[in-house]
Every structure is written in C-alpha cells, then in structure tokens.
Image (tube, rainbow, N blue to C red; front, side, top):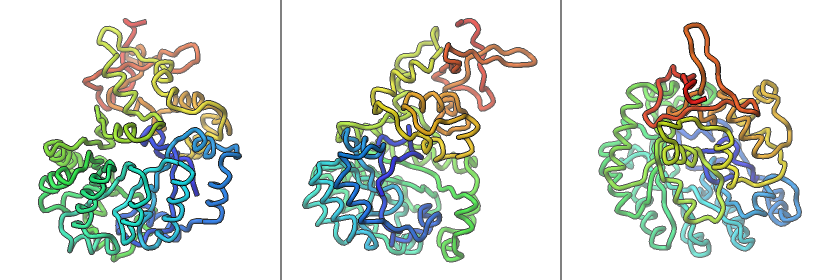
Amino acid sequence: MIRPFCGEFLVSPLPLELSFNACSYSCAFCFSLLNAPNRTIDMPRLTRFLASYRNRDTLEAALLQQGYPILISNLVDPLAQSNDQQSIPILKMLVDLDIPFSLQSRGGKRVDEVLDFIPPVVWYLSINQDDDALRKKIEPGATTIESRLALIEKLTKRGHTVLIGFNPFVKEWWRDFPAMARRVKDAGAWGCWLQSLHFNQKQLRNMTDKQKIAIGNPIVTRALKRGRPEEVAWRAEGLAAVEEAGLVSYCTGNEGRSHLFDAYRKVYKKTFPIMQDWIHYCFDRVTPDKPIVSFDEFCHVMLPLLPTGEFYIRDYIGANNRELWETFDVPTRGTFKQLLALIWDMPEMGHCPIGEPWFGYAGHKNSTQSEIFVDSQKLPFMIFSPSGFGDDEITVEASAYF
C-alpha cells in the first residue's frame, strides 16, 4: 500500500513509499526480507485507493493531490519476478493518473517494457560487488553486475537520472572498488549513496545459516555494531574513491555538504525538505559572530516544502520509537510545524539537528551544571560551528551571544 515514508523523514526528499511482494532477488543482507519475509501487496485495496485518491482525506491522498512523488520502493525490487505482474500495471496506472514516482530497481526481465511507457524518472540502482560469482552467493536471484551497468547506460540515454547505491558497502566484497566507481560514472550515473552494512538483533535471529555464510560470519558479527573504527575508515576510503571518479556522493554519518538529492529536485516539481537543506543553510548563512540558530529559522527553511493542514503525524515519531508518543505527548493529528517542533526538541530522534556534529545546545556551562537557553516557545536555541563539536559537547557556552 502507498504510505508516508515516515522513517526517512528529513532524509529522503520523497514523502511516499509503495512496496510490493517480498522480493525474489533474495539478497542475504536484505533488511526487508529479514524483517518481513512474507510481505504481500493488497492489489484491490491499492487500485481502489488510486482510483479515488482525489476524494480522500488522508495524508497519503493529500500528498498525491499536491503533486508529491512516490518512491517505488524502499523495501522490495518492483521489477523482480515476484513483483512485475503487479508493479507494471500499477506503474501504467500512475502514468495515466499523472502521479510522479521514482524507481529503486536493479532491473529485471521486463525492464524494457517498463521503459517504453514511463517518463524520465530518478532511478536508484544498487551494486554491491564487482565479482558475479560472489553476487550469485549473496544476491542469488538478482540481475548480473554487467546487466546493471548496461541498464545505467540505457537509462541515461533515455533521459533518466541514475543514482547508484553502494549500499551496503562491504570492503571484502570488492576486488577493485575505485574501478567500479569509474565504470558507473562512465556509464552515465550522476551520484551514489554509500553506506555500511548494519543488522539488528531481530534481523540476526531471522537470518539463516546459509545467509550468514554467504555474507561471511565475521562481517555479520561486525555489522551488529555501528561506528566501528575500521568501518568508518573503509567508508571514508569508499567516499574518496567515488568523489575521485566524479560522482556526487552521500553517506549517512558523513552529512557535510552533499548535493546528491538535487537529482530529485531537478526531476520532480515538489519534494520534501531534508536535513541537507538545513545544513547547507547554516554553512551558507551562519557566521562566526552570530552562530546561534533557532527553531524559527529551521521552520523558515523546512516549512515551505511541506504541506499545510492537520494530518496524522504520530507515525513520523513512532517510526523510530513508539514509546516517544507518551514521553513527549505527541498529538494524534497535527501540523508539520508541530512535527518539526517535536523533532527540534527531541534529541532521542535521529532526525533532531543536535545529532549532527555541527550543532550543540546554546547555553551556559559551569563546573556543576549546564543551562540550555530557550525561546518564547520553550524550544532550545542551538549553536552552529562549521568545524563541528566533540561527541561529548552537547551544551556549548553561548552566554556572550544573549
């Protein structure tokens, strides 16, 4: 079903997500298969919704009515054989209804059929190894590496914008990663998202011994803990290689300036705001003599890209931790400004700017306690530094600016 892309709010510029059946590409590392191996799509419900979305009063319908695009899909490959019989008719329906969408797919047997009727879109295509023998072990049902490179060329020649997912990026799965970065650039790719492999305990419990062996047991163990020094170093090497190849890059955890998501803004008339918008604003507008930033400024940057009105907003918080509903008294319905206020004030949320290395709370510190300065709405002021703060520097002395 089409649903708000709540878990990626302020990360992805695409506010809606549509997934189909569990993917027959059977990638051993796939978080979606490990979380929900029996995922199915309710086609009658989906087609009824699309046929009547203009007359519905839901957040999903409102976003479609206002022209926002759908991501197809974050959870499965729509062109895998387990999905193409359902996805292709839906894609045709979206084209007929003039509903914009973006595709995440490695391609499939019917990709040419799709390309004959869809308009140019942003296409996200993942490549995780440069050895097809290894690919067969880790992604047994997926398309070959060479076919993906050929698809990049075909897509760009037809006017599509191609982003590459080196995601997950596992050093042991590459013989010559810089060479692959150059190949995808030469094939016409515009940029890439590079990310380390990570599992949670639930996913590990659902993983079969065969999947663990395919991935590599040491790699599985390593992927249970984020931010290991070797992973950080390897990720930095990978980012350096893609930038050397001339690709625009992005990596969660390395969120400095990145223009990867400009690709979506060039294709789609309407997109959601992302944290990169706020980070770029601060780098461009905040000066050393006036480093204080406020919630009102945050809204100035973010709100123009969000719909007006009241909607069911709890899932934007619950996507990470439903206990936060009660802790922060999250309303069932509210405006996106209310949602932004909760996020600004909620360090427990991964979306909160305070989680970025360039922000600290503006306050007064002494030897025994810290006081955070707040505005008339009782929301904290933050202080921005382009050189960043240390991991333990949450409250930064800022008395001189008040």
